[in-house]
Image (cartoon, rainbow, N blue to C red; front, side):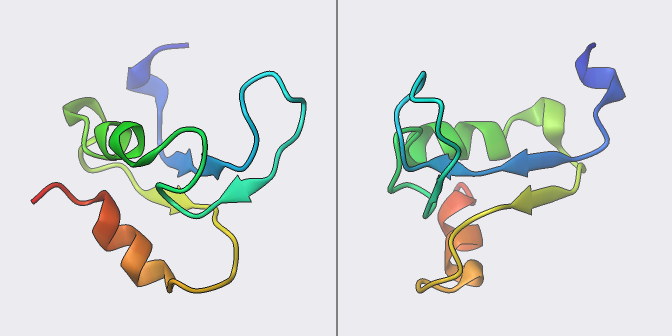
Length: 73
């Protein structure tokens, strides 16, 4: 397909490991994908300027806290 066709990113960490056949979301950095990988994706130059949709459990921490976790300081 190609990166040039992307219009947005939909991100979530995974409660279950690859190949489990389950689609359950974990809080950012607390799943099998992990914080380092999530940060690398969210901050990759190829995705600069694209809207990002976080799909995470609706429980504390607040979504603003998860967004701050993804930012590279």
